[in-house]
Length: 167
Image (cartoon, rainbow, N blue to C red):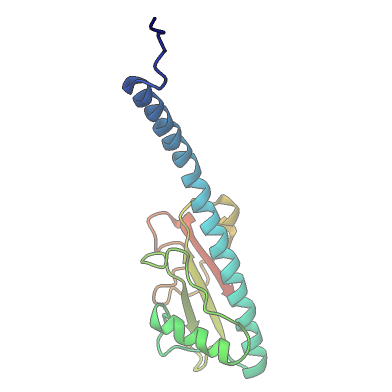
């Protein structure tokens, strides 16, 4: 006598349906978290520029001037030279870099050397998201030197320009 046993397992159609459902759910999750990741990178940018501002003020208190990089715009290698000056002075421990660190998402330091030495500066970053909470950080009084257009004129959306200006 033969006993019939039921085959165990899933059919190919059942497996394809499950895979399709998982793919749809993964796409939805990725789409909803993309904005949160951009906001997190923007928060990181604001935090790092705040740390650089503190280091620049410490440098100023020791040297009676802000560091310069040889031009009115310090980005890329010249940003590194300014950060090295802050590291050598003991004001900061590591070089801050933008989380993406490719144009236009790079940090920019613009010392105003119109008086002969750097007595004021602007730090600028381009944000990925429109942040109304940071709208008060635009300053039309600061001269638009080099790449530091702190009045928001340097980007297609001025709300994405974040500047720290001193004084």
